[in-house]
Image 1 (cartoon, rainbow, N blue to C red):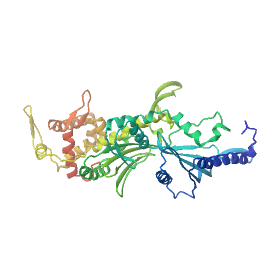
Image 2: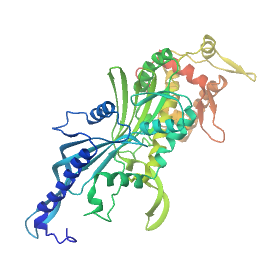
Image 3: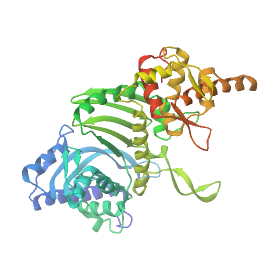
Image 4: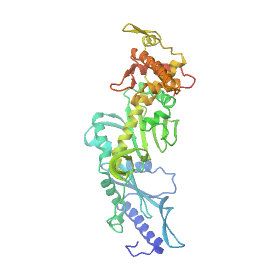
Length: 466
């Protein structure tokens, strides 16, 4: 305002003039392209569904689909009078917001929302599935897409490579180009200025497509039960790369909701979450949603103890960090799937169970049996089968404290460690656990996962199974 010679007391008149220019531009853009300009009243209309209906009806393959206008709340400024005034102050207010729905040749259907009051905040929403669909068409790879889900793809490996390119695009340049399409002030009043782009919300989905529908129907219900009954707070925190100790300050909770045509389970950690749900009766989707990236870290330049260093620092919302968003989410989804993998479709054989409940001899030494109905044995298996150990394995000390509590002295701790070592040996000779090379950690084998998973389904030690 100062650069234009506008006094603060003329703020309302000045910004109203700019708001009128934006409104007129939106209406002219719709008329120029022969597209509808629709005035909404409230939030009852599902804008994206309405826009898709219009695009389908008018067979829009590229270009403007429609423009919606709606009065909504926004972050802006108000002029305040008083001592030392007048002055501008941040304020929450209502203004007209324009939604430009555009069918883009690269990203498919996107919408660009701009508030017509200063500072003309722009929000752009796009879907990676739309982007992948166009990449598959360009690569001439056959696919079947139902809604927001691919149920068949000729070459899944190539499709994954195309999808992985999404987060590596030059986003500041792409988003600035889209903003110029809806904000004419960037070439006038705001000439020379640029938007600072952030990722307000990122959803990263991993889809597991089942070829056999019968397999899917039988397994998905087991996945739901397993996720709710077995995944505790420690497990979910581990999936999202958090430590469940005194350093974590926040809430973690889970919820399962059934809806037509399926069911969904969601695990919250503060403002971020992982959810699992089914799509089109044959796809299991694991999705990590990041709203608050500051809970995660990224390697970047920063200042520590007064010195500039390149190290791990909290991650900001800057859009160029999108590759790190993808890395964190992909890892979280993979860990979640690894945790679900303990839920086997087929149970252990009769021979496996006989081997578990009978003593075993190796190198002339006899090792005792396990009793699947004995609480101590089941508690041991429940602890070993924690999802957090699927990722990094478990140590003697991890299991010892759960089974016996914290030792009061060194001698007692050694006795407890010896007992746990004997338990590990009994599992090891049955090939239910294996040593992780060059470490003091153990991991559960596929055989062990199958047997212990079934035992835990049969016997719940008084609710102690996590």
